[in-house]
Image (tube, rainbow, N blue to C red; front, side):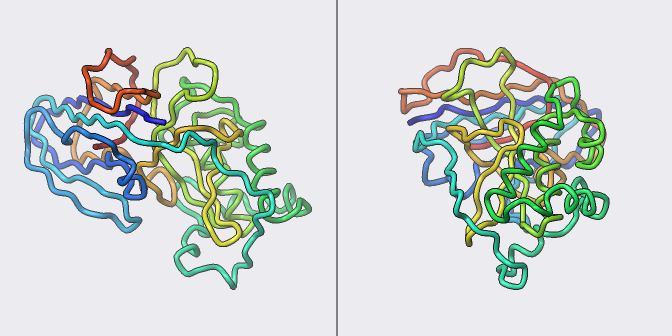
Amino acid sequence: MLIRLGHSITYGLPQPTPMVLTLNIHESRRTDIVVASEFRTTPEVPLRQYRDSFGNVCVRLLAPAGTLTVNADAVVRDSGLPDPVAWDAAEVPVDQLPDEAMLFLLGSRYCETDRLSQMAWDTFGTTPTGWARVQAICDYVHQRIQFGYPHADATRTAAQALQEGRGVCRDFAHSAVALCRCMNVPARYCTGYLGDIGIPPVDAPMDFSAWFEAYLGGRWYTFDARHNTPRIGRVLIARGRDASDVAISNTFGPNELLRFEVWTDETDDPTLSPRIAAPTASAPVALAG
């Protein structure tokens, strides 16, 4: 399967402003890129890449006063298979976890394990361990939180989302991540592309998506508490402890998001032929070719 994906984002800036953009397709999917346009800005400014502490590729730039548009477009090859399911994947005892997984057992900015630990053990302490326990957490979060774009709140934490019973995809991911960590299952937050592939058409503007990965049976597996079903065509952008680690843009000065466009669609064209205009929306972002 081929997937055409990309973005076009415009910021308004009253003064020259340093920015860090986490917009690149994740290194784990780079070999799947069939063709990609060069990441570009309008107006053109010098760009410098670096890898953050989680291995995500970030771009540094100094945006001029006025407007800045960042664009990327790519065709990516995908297996066309849904997220793998492994009901026999066992929980790894904490003392046997690899060192790099330990960070993802700890609380973080949006995943306050200290506030949720007792509730988590009261709720999931008697569930079977391993895959079944993580799935039980996904079921709980999926049933507990009502999805809606008007519910977006950039400061809402996992505990708040569960208490309020509403949110967007990041709130589902934060809540499930926090509950997994409370139950001694390493979990990390993911952001990327997830189009309406293999499901009935969705009457909503395309946006970026959040999901999470849990460490079971010696490897990381994808889970999605919002959709709560295996999906086709995920393309990862970045991983971290929570959304604060994988923000699409960090802007060190006043700014306004003026325009946001994102697309991710199945295609049979392995070229970057002229694209029909994608739907628009006003929400934070992510990618690069």
